[in-house]
Length: 197
Length: 197
Picture 1 (tube, rainbow over the protein chains, first blue to last red):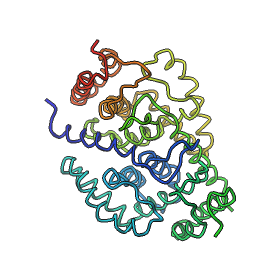
Picture 2: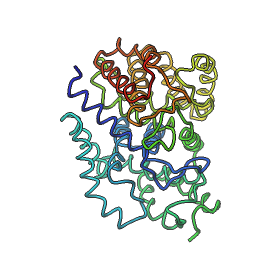
Picture 3: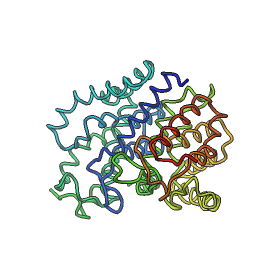
Picture 4: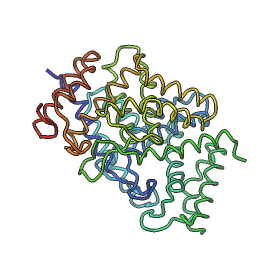
């Protein structure tokens, strides 16, 4: 007899299969399809592991990785909302919180609490783990656009200034990471992926 | 000036973008494309977090997650080799080891060593972290086939007995996980995804 607990955990793990078909504005190499939120989450989790020395001493990197692995799960129910869609981002906050509660309620109680806690910690952006996760979540799309030469961003080009406005908070976190981000943004402008304005 | 170290780390993180276009024999919901190794890695890492209580006490789950996030990176250079392709699996072992060395050599020395160590530990299947990772890596495709109703496995159907032969080592690890695996396999036979033989 399979215990209810294991069945609940497996039902959750089968449910999140859906994240692989939630598509983002980013591209993939070769340009045949858009990036999805599951592979994006994998990429940022590996960024946390690789770039951990740029986080302040004492940052719990395993926690950052967990946060990044689950941060987009709510999109199973809400879809991905483009970072530059200000009104959309504001409107989706409450539905995303409800989506997290609905999804994590599939899990046994202790895990439901743990996953909700991790998800809310990321959203609240207050702890050093959440701040590092947010920096990586904002660096990855810039790197993706350049690496995949992705022009098809929400059907129209972004301008350099729009990107810098959204991403410049990275500077306060790490001047080194920001310097790299700026270089990638400028390389993308040169490639014609972003407008110069 | 961006330091060489950061540039090396970022070059590595851009290189692994390629894993998103390494496709496996698994499917995705809706059936429009095959699953890739990056989103598979995301899924098994979250399985480690969710199912950690089925690993023996003292298993380092953060290490299991790291292992699973990097275990398929070699496929950037070798492609994915189907588990049921015995000759192919044997032949690819040496190229995969070389691929790991080539890829991880992009990283600063300490990280190169760490990633090689993690990758080899998974391949050697000796530690309790590697064994748990291997169990999850073998459970996920069964769950994926059923959830996505994926019939298009290497162009021809697998039989129930073939799958059980490959996966029955899970029984020695956890009778509970194996019981669940058997149920999913039988459900898939009933759906017509696997042959009855």
